Amino acid sequence: MQIANGIKMLELSKNHMGKPLIAYPTLILDDPVILVDTGYPGQLPQIREAMAKAGVPLSKLKKVILTHHDADHIGNTLSLQNELAIEVLAHEVEKPYLEGTKQSIRLAQLEALRNIMPEETKTLQDNLKAFFENNKIKVAKTVTDGEELPYCGGITVIFTPGHTLGHICLYLRQSKTLIAGDALVVAGGKLYKALEFTNFDADLYEKTLHKLTEYDIEAVICYHGGLYQENINQRIAELVGKQNKKPSPESLSKKLLKRLESVMEQTLENRI
Ligand SMILES: [Zn+2]
Image (tube, rainbow, N blue to C red; front, side, top):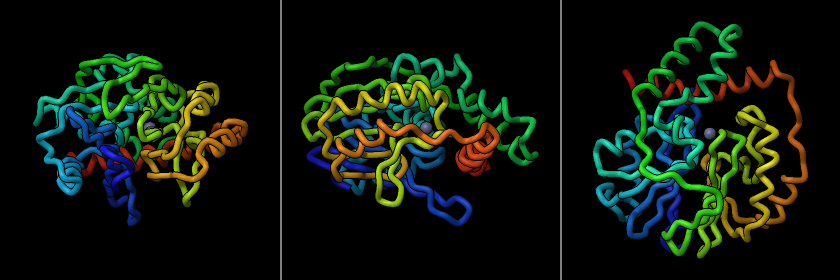
């Protein structure tokens, strides 16, 4: 879907227990062509198809910017690096998780939940571990908060740690488009904060989200939920002022496990 001149939102769909699970990476059609986040593991054919539909062959892709290191965002990065000479950009804090010199924070969270985990989930966890071990991504360039990338009329890096410790959003100045990664979500046609259980550090998330109020935003692309275009500045100001409800640690753990299962299942299907 065309969002603005040179910006397309891709739609990558997978089936999860009979329901469609959709990821929305962003394609930036400049010289170089850039992809922001790369889908669930095993979706390279879908990326190829979605890019062709957008009028660009996959072979033209030169750079990938990763908002953070969750498996559903980095799923096909290594395949892209193996197939093409792709340069990967990410925040400096996220780099060691991507390169595998630090353990993924999701794996660390799962480790802590292992005693309440059903056996089949343990298998999925082992599989996610294998995914990270087999998907060490070389980061060619690190970016910092406020850095201006010279593409598509200027892209500002907004450092928004909390969901992960090196999470970034991107603001495309010319079209006033925010690529939110997982800092915000769209559900039922409305814009929301990231669900509490998906944030590694909930307090840090709350603290850094207000940065988004400093930008004049006309379109938001959320990796989960897609495009949102209604009174965005007003909606973000509303969200920043509202504290997320604090669920109990038990319910947090259960929800986190459920979410991670959907990602882990895909890595399993991909291996078979
Ligand atoms: Zn995430």
